Image (cartoon, rainbow, N blue to C red; front, top):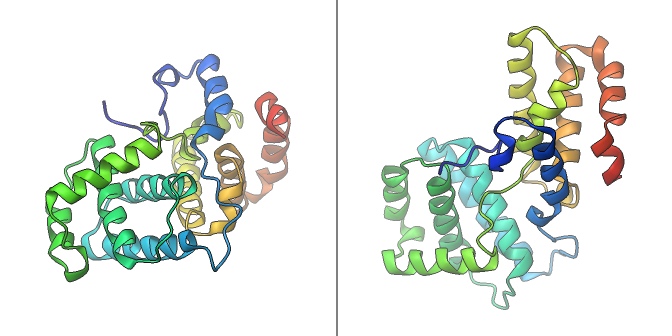
Length: 232
């Protein structure tokens, strides 16, 4: 089944409140625990290399930004659970290929051409067996929780609180907020925040840019949300 980042849980498809409640209740299970990272930590080195290589791949081969986002989410969660002792660049490279492959499968997208191009590059020359083995290691570390709850999962709900009738404005807010979310992912310090918090903040930033006169009222709507109050 294809993973839609806005509705990772099946029960959320119809936007019922029990589905929304489940998103808020389970979002912490999909967060990486990287708060102890320091510049001397091997995982810091691996993440920096992996993110740099993914950005390069996205620019070079026009990868779907949501596949890229999901793959970085997998990498962060993997690194927060997997002990890595050796500072070897090839670990980051094979982790990038495996995570992109898994993200593409979850999004039901055919990345075969892009991945083939990527694997032809000198630094990404891994055989199929090695990639499948790395995929299995990632799956095990993530306990097969691949339907990630991300900030995108909360955008529809928060926008519904605003009671906006203009569909074009809704699309614009989502697009602007999505850009903020994607850009924030690469900054390590933002990994400490829950996906719902990032989603709410991104929407408020989008509101400030697009309809600043509504910023205060939208902020009040989000602040009074029962789910937001529960997770403070």
